[in-house]
Image 1 (cartoon, rainbow, N blue to C red):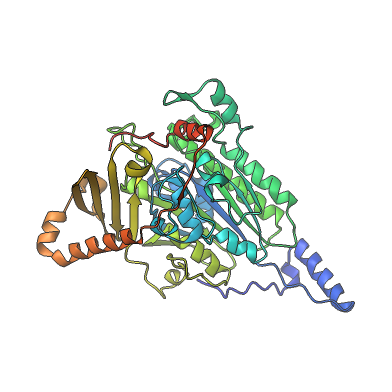
Image 2 (cartoon, rainbow, N blue to C red; image 1 turned 180 degrees about the vertical axis):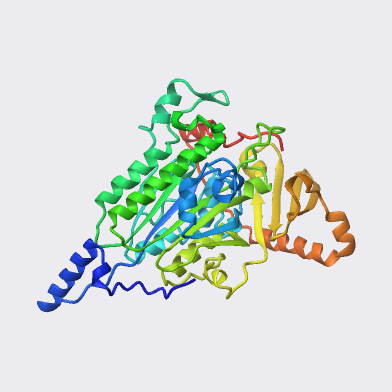
Length: 464
C-alpha cells in the first residue's frame, strides 16, 4: 500500500507540461554551467469542516447523499472510521491538529479566551521553514489570527466584512437576541479566496494550503440550492462537500499533476438532540461530538484505497503529513504518524484523551470540568463539579460496541469484576490533567467579545 516516499519523476513521457518546462530549464542550466533543479515536493492541502457529525455523511453510510465529493476522494484514499477530536471546540481542536499536541499541552482549552503561544511549533511553521509557501483561509471568528492560529502562514485570511452572510444577517437574521454580523463566511467564498491565492503563488515552490469551512455550524441556513431534499443541517454539509470537490478539482487542474497530500478532517461534531435543543457541542463529550471524519489522499504514496476501523486522533494529523513528506516528526508532537498503521507495522494508540472545560472557563456559570479516555470499544468519562470546598465526581463507562440507543453506564459491574481496569482509567485521566498547561489569556476588546457572544460562545450553550 505504501510506495517509496521519494517523489522522483523520471519518465518524461508522463511528466505534466509545467514539469517538462522546468526540466528543460534545469537541463539548460546544466549546459551553461548551472545545477539541475530537483522536482518539487508534494503540495499539502488541509481542509477542515467545522461542526460536522460523521453519521450525517454519506461517506460514512448516511442514507442521504450529503457528501458525494468526499466519497469520490475516499474511493482513492484512506478513510478513518474512528477519528476522534480531543476537545469539542474549534480553536483548541484546530490547535491540536496544527501542533500534534493535546489541549493540556498546547494550552488552548476553550474558544475565544486563549491564544496559541508563539512558542508552539505548528505544521505551517515547519513547512514554511522547509521552503513551502503557506496560506490559510478561516471561515469564522474562532480562527481569527489574534488567537495565534495563524502562525507559520505567509498569508492568512479571516476577513468576513464582505461576506454575503455579513450583509444578509446584518439586515435580517437574529441569533440569541443579537444580530449576526461580520464573523462568518460561506463555503463558496472561502473556496474563491483560496483559488485566487493559488493563481498568485510562486509556481517554483510547493505550497501548504489550509481551508476552513464553517457552514455546518449553527444556525443551519444552507443556500437555496441545498434546501430542497435536505434537512437544514444536512444541506449545510452538502454545500460544503460541493465546495470541497470544486476546490480539489481546481487545485489539481492548476497544478498540472504535481503530487499532493490532501487531508479532510472535522474539528468536532454536533449533538442535534431534540430533547436538548439548545445543547450544541462545546460542553459535551458524547460520541456525536467527539467522533469526526478524517480522510487522507496521497496518490503517489497511499496507492490503495482503504478504510481503517481502529481509533485515531486529530493530534495524529500533523505527524502523518510530515511522515508522508519524508520529514522528521518533532519530539514536541504527542500524536503519531498513521502510516505504520496502514500497512500493519504498528497498532494505533490504545487511548485518546478527551476534555471540555467549557462550563468552567468560558461559560462561567459553574466550576465544572469533563475529562475522558476513549478506546476502540469503550469510553470512560469523569464529570467533576466544584462548589466551594465540595467536589462532586460523576463517572461513567460506556460500551461503544452496542447500538447507541442501548448504551448505558456499565461502570458498576465492570468495577466489580475488573477493578484494576477502572483504576487504570482513573490514573490515565489524572496523568493527563497533570500536564495542565493553560495558554495566555486573551484580552478581549468589546467588539470581539460581542462577536463571540453572537456566535454562541462565552456563555452561549445551555442544558448541561
